[in-house]
Length: 396
Ligand code: RFL
Ligand code: PHB
Image (cartoon, rainbow, N blue to C red):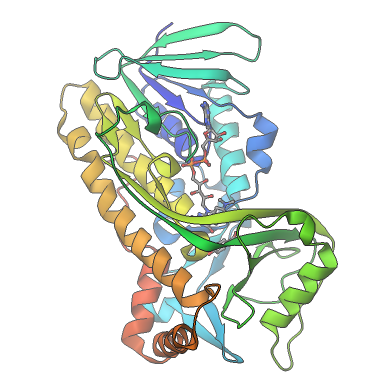
């Protein structure tokens, strides 16, 4: 069998790449170890940058996003018993973010690929890639029917997330890796209750960080800083609501509670691997970099990578290797900006176990600064809404 681009992973990066390449008449095969239902239900990100929304719109993927996405013009930062609003529209000359769940982005992408008769194989096993140094790399996998497939490709895209097989396929010694693990994790819940706030609340609290996000006018998404490796069983629903109420407490304001629909714990890590390319293998999204979720950047970086990669592959297949050669450096600029921003938001807002009073005093000083200095607030706002301008979805 033969395709032009073999894509490992049907997350946002792999699916959007497949769609952007299809718009350019380039044939792809996507392979995914999980089921379609699992990919569509996996609770993750919720915030799309200004440029990500534009990219999805230009790629013809925004029908539901435009109907159901909730445009947000700011966030609240809560600390020392006060809740302060940052107005992104005012600070950035009109920029906003849109709350639209990753589950919905993935559903839209899968539906679009399947409607166009795109090849997406779910529930594959034993994915393998080889021949990456040649111009005919091989993607192999066992399909859900038990048959082994070998697909000769021009290019392979490693969009298989942090725990995938593509990054490890790059020979040892060729990648430089930067990594930091944080001494805390996030416990996230999805709750069947209308949000208690009009904008996201990021709360600094002596008991640890908390975030109030949302999914729709009737569904809330909330997070609590917890100890890393903490079993989710330690957190019955009542304990979660009690802790959230404590960390968000503010006179005259109440946190509405409701049935918990989903619950999970996420470790926090910063990770960058460079270069994002080896021969005919290109890495995109979480396969190449991870940010802690505090800055809401991971999904946006994944989309931005493939917006650069699709036109670069197009040119490569037509004999011009320039954009493909520049791919890694182009993406890493944005990746490092988001890596710094996510680290900065994370360390400003979380309580480090065993930290001294100095850490808290410095965090509070920084929080007061970003909520009172227009220059500092503008810096946060331009990073949160998306600092670098994305290339156009059509690669034009
Ligand atoms: P994904 O989504 O992990 O998809 C990779 C896919 O590859 C498959 N796979 C394989 N397939 C075939 N063969 C193999 N050997 C394979 N190995 C793996 C996997 O099953 C999977 O389907 O990576 P991608 O596409 O790069 O997308 C990245 C985003 O998912 C991620 O960065 C975001 O979810 C991060 N993130 C957030 N990002 C934001 O931009 N805004 C947010 O508000 C935000 N909040 C979050 C987040 C991530 C979170 N968690 C749970 C990690 C909140 C949370 C709690
Ligand atoms: C979410 O809605 O899941 C979300 C929002 C903002 C973040 C992280 C996650 O910083």
